[in-house]
Length: 60
Image (cartoon, rainbow, N blue to C red):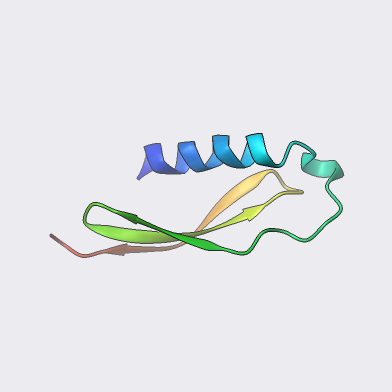
C-alpha cells in the first residue's frame, strides 16, 4: 500500500507542477484496485497532498 501511495504522489507531482500556485479545482477522486482489495484517494493540488480516503481489504 505504501509503495502505491508513493507512486500516486510522484504522479500527482508530475501532472500538477503548479502546487500551491494552482488556482483551479482539484481533480475528482479515484479508486485503485490492488491485490487483496482497493483504496480510494483524492489529490489536493494546493496542499501538494494525496489523501487516502478509504482502504478496503478483502482478506484474501
